[in-house]
Length: 488
Image (cartoon, rainbow, N blue to C red):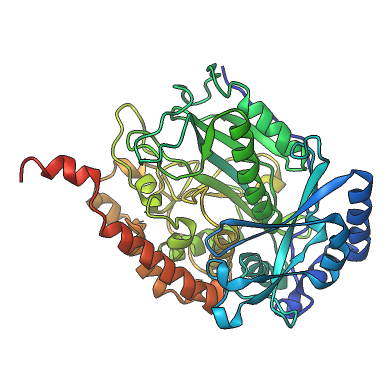
């Protein structure tokens, strides 16, 4: 029996865009004004809420280049000054932010992201959080800030009249513990896809997690058990890409906190188990022009427009180039290229193709009813990726397809994994990079990814990922010792 928890309908915030102000000092203010947000009134609301709700801690959040959440807490009495001047910090201590001799940076709270966390205060008053934009001392946006990377991409879309919406399906595992010696962990249950599981620990986890998310304004569409033991999926309601990226970072924090409160551990590692499917973040994408879905065309047999087809073609053309961003960890490629599993269909999206309702393709065009539901699903994305960078490269690859008028190749209607290598080559289906090392080298030659990320983030990302790959490549693994130690 399946458990599906439906969330309330939320009105998504308009996509953040800033036109020609994208690189200027007033980026965040310009964005909020275009959204119809009165920043001063929003600040007043935040300060008033702190007093009325007896909020004792305000956490200011941002991410490093790799997507790791960073936080600094400020006392409510200091927040008014933080709105005006920001909070200074040492950028050289944050992965990818700055070198030692240019380390001064400022975290500027975005009042439109203010949210009370009623479940974290306990008896000492409630807490709240806001996301920050990272600025340089002169007030200009930092090129190292992943949020700024996405803002630039959204500004480019806005110049063309588009608003970019995303809707992620986030998979993760619940584990009884995280072994410190790297041994195989134990999942909390032995359930399968859509099972209504009953287990001794964390038995009410999904309901509590959804309630916690709803209480902080993150709308949930569905939640259910996934294919593997202990594997869960929670789908967030669609919103503009910046709001969704913020929600994903908040989601990871909340899920881990709720899991710990149940005495278990949540992990977004793409492939914790060799003999079970991995966790991804299939993400639905759409472009709107005002209130009109730019992906919808009632005259097309599949009801998708020329804009949508060119967008898909852009994703396919540049997929190999941006895979290091959407799948940024060594472990990511164990999910994309898993061992064959008995009695299970392999739906890993490892081949560059698209299909109508085809879950083995990299890009799927779902069947839909209402015109505003027209969308595409990108399937290789990790739930452990940096969502700001990932959404930026996906959007700009699609826009490139629209700008250049890329032609969409024929769709794949067969199970792509059931084809032979020769058949896939004959059909023109390229393979995604098979490991992080290959992905990084393909990315290194990409003009598109370099332009989207900016020189600073692009160079740091390449250095960091090359180092990760070299460290992994040189490691002697238990697999090698087990296979070779006694026979060689």
